[in-house]
Image 1 (cartoon, rainbow, N blue to C red):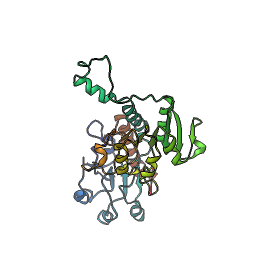
Image 2: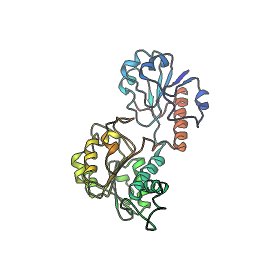
Image 3: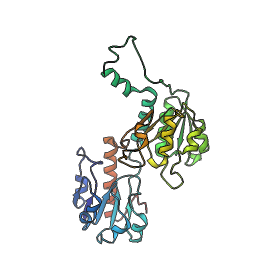
Image 4: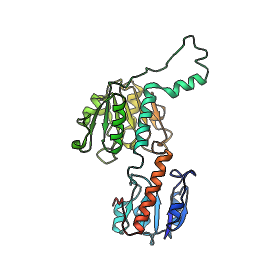
Length: 316
């Protein structure tokens, strides 16, 4: 079997091993694949692995050997699943590999908004503490989480992990989305608008669908308390970025912490890059070494199961 990895760099920039994948067949592993090189690199592929490189309906006709596509992520919108199904090509994904890492990053964004440790550490390094007339200072309100309310949109695996973290900080937890019968006892199910209206922190953990696109829109942002924070470590298009930037810049809400944007890398004119009290990280919540090791192990396991005739994690 000929195996082609189209864009392996973000999964494995050099600190992991491809040996288990190479043991399954002849491998061509590319760090990145520009769209114009996809067909030439994949022409002889039986097995194609992609992270963010798009595989569209038009590509399938030019890939006669293709028997399997593995997505090196949980989201599968990079592959035309309908076209793959029409050609009897299974597409697999890697679920649940980064649950704890993304939950950790979500809380890191929240803690930076509430304590500004990074900002204040930078100011100390710049000499401000050494030259300060008082023995302490802070440039932003310091916010205690105990007793505040975390509202979670989407109580799946990651949402539940974030709920556990919030509870550990003494927060009350509201949630919507998911099977309410499976909600833990400490989580109170509410309607979506109540999440935005009643929470001190709103954290988004739902998939991107036509129904959830721009879920955090002008109307819902207006429901939020002026002291509240919005977090998004899920999918960038869940947020109306223009509306959020306006809300931040006018003091309509206190801050936002985002690991995802509507276009990645972002366009230079994205309004959130310079919005007031907005912390943006470069979609790396998933990227701990432990999470990437799990991702690679599961992805290789998906290929192995396919070769054994018992495919798993099929999404189409």
